[in-house]
Image (tube, rainbow, N blue to C red; front, side, top):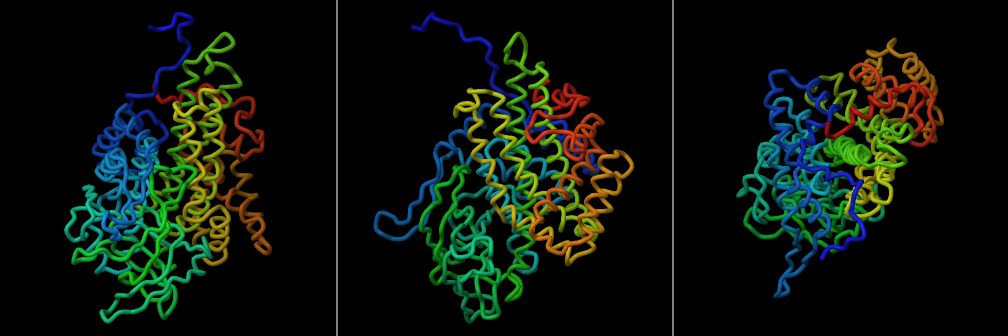
Length: 544
């Protein structure tokens, strides 16, 4: 019998049953801006279908189940034979299957594929970020494999397939396959040139036997992996299948699964190679150069994934405040709360706009766009992923104590938020990569300056920020200690330029004032007087 001491009131309804894509005005605008008009109708249909699925009660329940029931490692069968299997909750397989079916590994196989996939990736991250890891690895393996046309012809159709086949069997028998990667080792971490895993050539040309270990192997249940190991001519990239063509297991010994802060639905493993068969990808001694195509693609996914996480957190915060009443009115209408929400909304829109612009550069494929990517991707990866954690934490605070309990879903977003900053090179690695590109590839800086230059003259604060950046670049002696500052400025100026060109005036004005003009505090909720807070918050509402 229900108690009669009180009636529950003043609580928002669950944020369910809506189109996650269609409700994101910044994301919709970016897709329509960058996609060929002939592709728009099909893309709208696909992305809205994915958005409705993402906002459904069923998929949100699967996300909770996948997170609360993390994978388990089974090293041996009942007879003592090694099997090295990772077992997942059924919800994980359902989510992963839907992600594959939604073309999230198929960008390379169709026109406008990168913009369409980027938008889908932002949407899908808002369901459950863990399953996005194998989707990202599989997508990103394609440029590395293309250094070997024969390998690409064999594997690319499997990787860009929309069929999820979870069975452990030879890839040649599967309609679709997933890829993982294993680069870092205990002694080196991000310094992959310190790797000690060895590769001994076998009789068949291009084949090797690997011995060694990997400290982090992403998505260890995948069908194949890109791996770095030392061949006679130096560090080399290899393709390691989990099951050989004859159906036997390739020695791929899973020692343990990582017990991680977040991303708990996804498996990350420590792996040992002991007589493991591998096929060389690219030339001997050029392993880092070969795998950099994969690294760049996954770094962009870190940007997109962080944009999705921030959007999910801010959507929940705005939704909560639209219904919750305190101190005589809706939280959404309180000037200080409106400042907080508007400030958070700016961050998500800037991240989304930047991420989709970089995806469009992949679709374009021209020399200038490729040069832009070389400097803009590490800068964006550095800055956007750094902003993800403070955004999700502040958004959770907008719910008060309600945001601190697991049932709200906000703690899962907070735990997930640091991941993309660490994955594929932590902050210092990205900042130093920006510096390396500046010193070695002047065409990349030229492409960047051309991009931001298209917005010059439209906002005096942006113009001043571009001038300050050029001043910083005039002398790169001793620049390593300020590489983070440079990377941050590169990202902020590019975000500002894109918003000035493409976003509504109230968005561009608030961003330039709060991020480039110095007229804001260090915490969220400190946008200067004059910002159109109401318009910014309304633009961010997931339901109108």
